[in-house]
Each structure stands twice: as C-alpha cells, then as structure tokens.
Length: 585
Image (cartoon, rainbow, N blue to C red; front, side, top):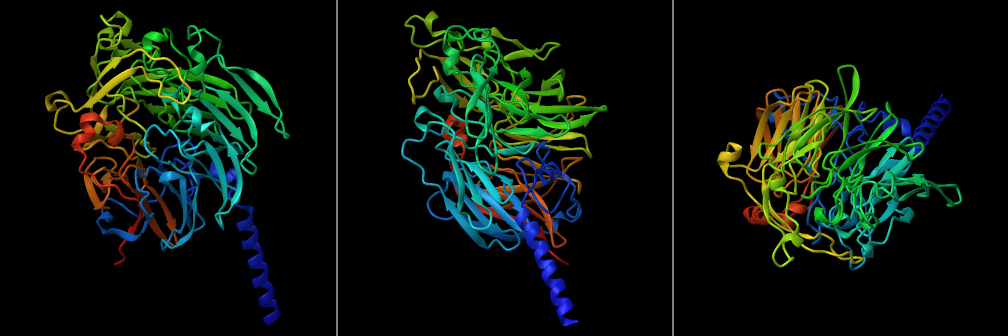
C-alpha cells in the first residue's frame, strides 16, 4: 500500500510538474478575461475591458478591505510607477521605473527575484522613466525597456532567455508599453513621437524574440515579413505615399504606438492607437497625415491594416490617438469603444471600423465644434495654433487657448468596461492649454516639436466646479455621463470593475478608491502614501479575492503639466506594491 501511495504521489508530482513546465499558452491568454485565478495580460484580458467576474468583494462588505501586504521597490529609483502587474500560479510579476522587474509571492509579498536592466546614458523617454507592464507566454515574462529593447526572463529565476533590439535609442526610440500576446505572436509598439521616429507595430515569436512581421503606422513606409532565418521580404507600403503627407515630412512622421494595443480573438484583429504626427506644427504638413492620431486594426496573421479610423486628422494640438480600443458586445454586434485624448468618445464597429457614434466625455472642448456623420471633427479654425510664417518675425505663430490640454481628456490611464452595467468607467481630466507654433527642422535625436505650450487649470464656472480629474461612468449607447466622482488633482491611473458591483481606481493624492459601479457612490478608500498612476487588478487565491495596485507618483504631469504641475507639486514620489483582501470575521 505504501508503494502504491508513493507511486500515486510521484505521478501527481509529475503531472503538476508538466503543467508548470507547459507554462502560459495562447488559449490561457484568450480566456484570461473569464478566469479568476491568474491575470495573464495587460487589460485583464486582451480585449482590454478590465472587468473581473469575481464578486466576493461587494459594496456591502468592501469596508472590510484591508492591506494583506506591501512591498517597496527600494533604492532611490522612484519616479512614476504606471505598470499593471501579472499574476501567474501564485506569483506576481511587476515592472517598475528604470526598466526593472520584480517577482513576488502573490499571497505574502515575499521577493522571489529582481531583474534590473542596465540603461545607457542618453535615453530619451518623453514622459518619465516609467514602464507599463509585461506579457506572459510559456515560461517567460517579456517586457520592453527605455533603450528600445525587448527582454524575455525566465519566470522561475529571472534569468535572461532572449534579448532583442527594437531600434536606436539615440534616434529617439524608446519603449514602455506592455506587450500583448495575440494569435500566438508577441505584439509591441514603439515610443518617441516627439523625436521624429516612425511608428510601427511589430510581431515576434514570443519564445525566441525573432521577427514575424512589421507594419509601419505612417503612410509611405514599407512593411515586411520575416522567415525563420530572419530574412525579410516586402509586404507592401502602408497607405499611399504622399496621399495625405506633402513633401518628405512623412519620412520622420511620428505616429508612435506608445501605449501598446488590444486584441480580440473574435475578430482576429489587433487594435493599436497611434500618436501625434511630427512635428506638432500642423502648418508644415497640410493633409490628414495618415495614420497618425488613429486606431489601426491589424490582421495578426498577415500584419495588414484591415481598417483605420482617424480621430484627429492634421492634428495641431498633440492629441495622440493612442488610447486603448476596448471591444465589447452591443446590439448584437462586436463593437469597440475609445475615449480619445482629443476629448471625444468613439464607438466603432470592431470588424469594419464603421463609425457608429461619437460624443464628448469632457465638459471643456473647444478645438472642434463637433463631429460629422462619419466621425470626422468639425474644426474651429480660431482655436488652431497659428502659422509662424504669418507672424511679423516668423518666429512665433498666433497663440490660442485650447481645451482639452495636450495631456488630454484621457491619457495613458486605461478605462474599464462592465458587461453587467453596460458602462465604461473613464478616468478623465478637465484642463486647457495656451499653445503656439514655432519654426522647426528635423535633427536626429533632438526634440521635434515646433510648438510651445503651457497647461492651465480651468475656471470652475466653465466645468461646474473646482476640480481637474473625474472618474466618469459613460453609456456608449446614449453618450450620457451617468455619474462622476471628481478629484482635485488630475487622474493618471486606470480603472477596474468587477461582477461584485465595484469600480476601483487610484488618485495622485495617494488614495485607492472603490465606488458602486451602478451609482458612483464612493464606498471605500485607502491611503498608500504616494500617488497612484497605475491600474489596479484583482484575482482569487485559496478562496480569497485580492486587489492590487502599484503606487508611485510621477509620469507626464510633473514634467509637462505647467501650471497644473505647480498646483500638485506637494505630491510625494514613491515606489511600492499594495495588495488588499477582506478582513476575516
């Protein structure tokens, strides 16, 4: 009997060993949004809904939510902490500022290993030394670095398995977005739109890092496919050369894919938002400037752009269109929602890109008078920054006061969608900017703006109160803001919603908050000691539901925020992971 029992134990151990060795599969990632024990992708599911089926924590018992553990990232490397963690079989993997990675025991917070990438001098991140997260595949954790590299680490040891260069950091390229796995491929974007780089989406073999295809997001540039030996063949240019870009400016046209993308297995499409065209001075580049400030839907099998929707043609305000495109079901169709930096919320057909409806989700919006029947903005010419060549000295164009500011009605902070309420939960901001154009010429590795600006707060009477940030529950069917929770400082962290009827989000003042997802009534908050500029997650382990968020004030607001940065200068930096669970009776 003892031999039989030992044999059974050995077989069980082998089975568990096999499961662990098999690692994270593409099927696991496709089902990520439906399962509760792990968080395997940025967005808590590649669709990006950030919705969890968990319902142990509710509006009635959330007052018993208390810290389970906290872990400090330590040292002097604080700055902004914008990453979403992953949880895999009881282990948490979180990226941090300066391209670091920590592996922690998800139940206790015990450090398992740390990886610190050695960054060179001369990197050019536009908006702090942040990182937004990693991807998981097989036994690997894969993330991007500020010097434009991709690194795959062994989940068990933190050892480097492979490392690949994305591009030249000395030319302005960097990378901070969380990669995603789509159709068995690793998809990544690039950062550096303020330096005249060329935006693109790359697909790689996640096990080796080798390229499979590459698709530029500026018209006129060639896409490529790669064989197993790394040999590339042309896969057609993006768009039509000079169709919407005059002269040669498309060669340094920007449109960075700096926030990464989402993927819907039902459509087979990956959705990437694209950033501003370069330079900011729109008078140098008449035309729509495709595919800047757009959502591009890419067939993951071929790397071809199946459709695109441009939210801000001929952008003159730095209204990057990078914000996440979140797919959902509505009216029997697969749709997608996007809260754009330009202040409009767009609802599109996820299969075709057909415009269904659009509406403002911020109260102060003056750069456009509205949207036409196709979703194209109806510009207010008086609120476009002027041409510097028309000025007396040719050095500064006419300045305008535009809303929202270039930091956007919504920026990097991801929204959430609940299929239970049918609402999107959008971290939004009300602010404006004085902006003007200046002459500029391209120089490799130098800032390529051609504009000056100062971000300013708005008069309370124009937005109905003295605040900047607001978490807003938005109905995509009607365009109505169902409820909002206002905040003194600008919101810069993301949202998460659960079947338990709660929406969670963080504030720069250091509070992780929860509200009733239907009514917006704030029912819980906890002070973590530094600003939260990252999205929370939730999972269950050993019968308990956990909530986690990384904390550490920073990001673009302190660096680019003008008068707003001065207003919130009292906020403290930090660097820590906070995990919560219900206090047992």
